[in-house]
Length: 265
Image (cartoon, rainbow, N blue to C red; front, side, top):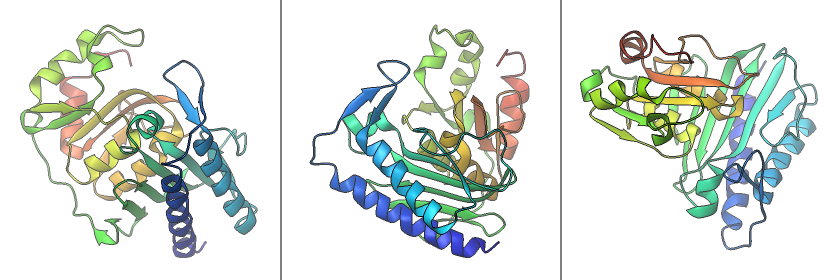
């Protein structure tokens, strides 16, 4: 498999998709809801996913596609080459801010991440990695992650998880939030993962994400020595929704053992 060639085309298509998104900024966007009024999708999300599908099918007809908007394949396994795509991760930010969203694209072979691309369209920053070849931002190598303590860490976490909610006992998260130096929330899993990769934040936690939210970011973070698991410390299954803990390896172990071990995640 010529991964360099696949990577080259994937980057070209991502840049082209970014231009299509930018050109939509001055247009009226058609907005629909999915599971609830805060789970949004636009005609641009669907257009970008379809754009990638046409490119992939036309060039690599044997490859499979798993996309957020459901326009790809219905997969029961990750056998062969699978492209996992979120055309706009952070749709609410895209609608309200026209920033803090990203194109997220992961390419997997038999369940192993090979290529990860996350494109911060508004800031023209492309984070990318090929397994075993390092991780980069706009072609400049990203240094390997350096360890930090919980007390010195910036944690990316949505405030939902430290207030009463239907998914977890919020009291379980409060000790960790109190222990860290500070918290941030950006509303896009893809960017929060590359912020861990670049050291802008030290860890990221979420309670429920889909494969297309995390597929690309997992490859980039792991290429830099970081760890990506669910909150039980298990490897992610890229066919199901799950919780997420992303952090520098030492910090990951401490958070898991000292703060999350008693939770029913």
